[in-house]
Image (cartoon, rainbow, N blue to C red):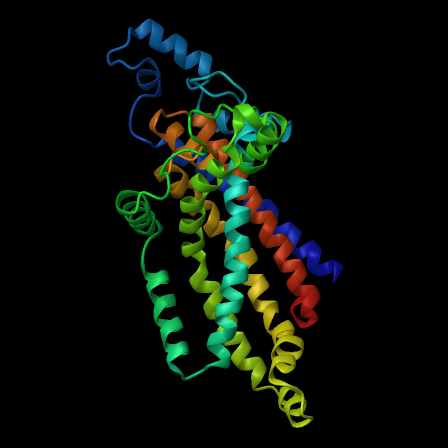
Length: 340
């Protein structure tokens, strides 16, 4: 087992350097002059332009810039934003709770709904319920995330006027930034000063519904289909037939004997889909103006703010690599044949 863990860990090293080099190279291929974008004008005085390039370290050869960047990364220095001159790591840590809040709630909903619906489809195999669920899952898997976001906005905000479409909270609630999680901060503020922040928590709940629903629709199809397939395979196992022959109730056979074993590949899939969730969060936050890391990176892209783009991508990629590493280890523990 330890050799398996070591092999998996060694794979992470070239993966890490490959991602950093690819991202670093790609950022510098973005069209446009970074100094002119920063100053908001074209034809900047050549002397000022050269001074700015020197100050940003962009006048050095490409490989030297990359070596400097990697050296600082290993020292925990991700650089400063070209625009705000604030540490990239500080900005990331301030915004990441908002993104984490969206991801956590989405994964929670995907897990609950996907497992329940997938189990129902497997148990009701060949019936109208199974066909209906399979059809809906196919629709969910076929429609891009930004289309879902627009549909939700049109229906729940445009026609029904039930939910807001942008931000984490109404501007009238200027609540203190304590944890970065909008729901927790709103709840704490309302408890501390009910007269001033009355209704803040409900307002935060309304703002988060559409972004979370969009991310949930992005992932729900995979979990539902995997649960259905795994449950069908498990229900055909000999020990399930033996349990039925002993006279155990269908509910006990499904929830005690079958579901527990069927969930192993589902849990693995949920872990792997975190990477898809990170990509979906960038689009979702941009569409709903959610104050998280995804919107922060998209804004940086339009400003050619290299340190934010490359370091934000690096952090996302590192988180994805670590999640996959943990999933590999857990899968190896659950199924020892894989670790050999």
